[in-house]
Image 1: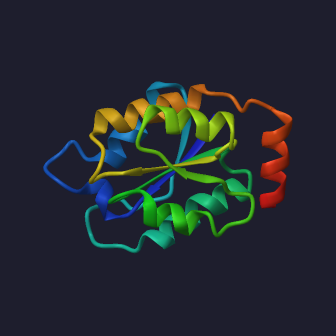
Image 2: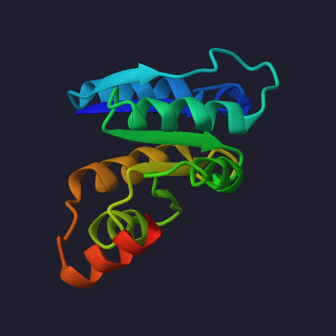
Length: 147
C-alpha cells in the first residue's frame, strides 16, 4: 500500500522522537511505500498547504491513503476534507480509528501531536490500516451522499 504523509511543523516539535519521521519509519516497517509530502523540518508552515499535497497525491492515484499530523489533527483534517473524494477522520481513540475505516471508509487519518503520544499515534495507524471497510449498504449509501 502507498501512503502519503504530511504534517505541519508539529510533526517536528519537541526534543524527539519527532512524530513525522517516526510515523514514516513505522509505515515502512509495515511494508508500506511512503510518499513524503513534507515538511522536512521544524520551521513554521501552514497545515492547509501540506493537507493539499497529501490529498492531491491521493486524487492523482499516487497514494491509496494518507496520514496527516498537526497539533490536534483538527485543522489539518478540516483542510483535507475540502478535497473531493477525501474522507479525512480525526481520531484519538482506537474505536474512532476502527469505525473511521469500517463505517466511513476514511482514506486519510488525521492525528494530533499535542494530544497523542507517539505510541498512541502508531497504534491508531495500525488499527486504521488493518481495518477493512465493512461494505455495508447503509455505509455505502451515506458515503455516496458525500460525493
